[in-house]
Image: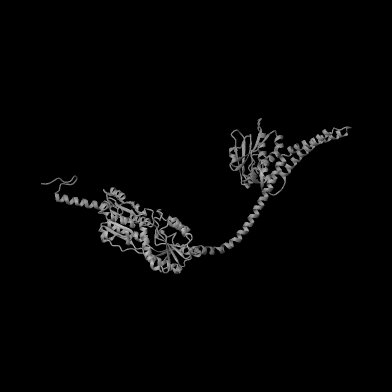
Length: 630
């Protein structure tokens, strides 16, 4: 009667086999890991429908909705499918037909009804109560952020839970008069939608006991533009009470807090409101509804209902005002004493005093001052020594630059002497000729006049040579002025032209077609250009070529002036390019290696830049960039 044993198990009876299998399962249950306790819940997501009264961005309901959404997503143990719809007809002063919206919702949810409906505000609550039978006959509902007077309790079913609030206008008016006891007028800003008209009547009813102490002005029948005009010229001892402004008397809808911000910008009186959604920037404060407390109760109720609890068993008492809150900045702006605030008031956004804000910084500074006092004297002494060293360094540099100019003048001495000999020789010859002509019986006065003109021209030519040389060699402090670079560079080219001519080197100057105005010292900049030209002349002097030429040019590049000195020599070795401007670096046998170092120092002092590169056609080009005068 025996059966077959499991594969790999010795032949045994059925009871023994059963016992063996149970043991195996027990071992597997111990070995295999359990599912993580924090794993995402399984099953279909919970479909939650949020129904807005005016729209997603109408305060204060938008803040209730935002908080409810966030808390639901945080607390829900199930995946959520949050859907939102808006009852647009509540915006209109004369509500239109709701049938199209009802048809839309019916077609949207006829196959898959939401697991729960949460209405935000009184219009949405009234709507879902009117059309429950048609739209959501078996769906549990949470009527949230609705004032208790606007709940139709006769129409509530076992599937409904109400999270209501209580607007106590009387308590709020009383708090205004306590905070500002000199108040003579309360201007009430409220809209013109059906909901706001209801609250206008309620506010008027609760204001009656205060009419002997203060006058009330009602702005419900005005466009918001007109309200802004009146708010700019309110009489003294007036306060503004901000109720609701979803739709004004002109039928204009006001989303978010744009309307209140506009009123706050122009009003010459403080603004009070019991809506927490508007607190924190534009209102002074007062007793107000806590969005967090009300939303938390709504979310807790929704979670309990989604978890299977019967809505009718959940009873929530109407939520009143939370303890008063006031904006410290508003108190300061309107001169409201903190001693007038109701007991238990909370003051937010207080700006700390200097000592409170920087207490530890001040203490640290005080402890450091003694150390700094000792260091400052040493630093001042060091600074004085450094400044003396800088002055001495600049003097040494100036002396070195002047020596460099003398050296250049020495190199040009022969060519300068040759250039002077020419006009001096011409002057001597013309003078002798004139003397001979004057000894004649009838001298030719016209020809003598021409000879005298030649003498004057040669004298001026010699004088210019001497002036250029003196300007280069003179020992004067640096003088930064606005100069014409074309004119300055032309002067430098004129000084060195005789040297180039004496060495049979073509020296060409190509000035920019426009005026180049820069700030600098003429002598120093001419020294830089002279140094570069003389180096270029040396470079091409040894070239066995018919094209022994040095070109000096000026140009404008973007917002800078450029000075270019190029030659047709052998160029500069690539491994020398990076060191060419370093002190004491030279490629000449008799060179000191200071000329280009001085040139770079002068250009840097003029906030410019000097670079060098080899030309593709042979030779090198030095490029100086200087800022232009704007």
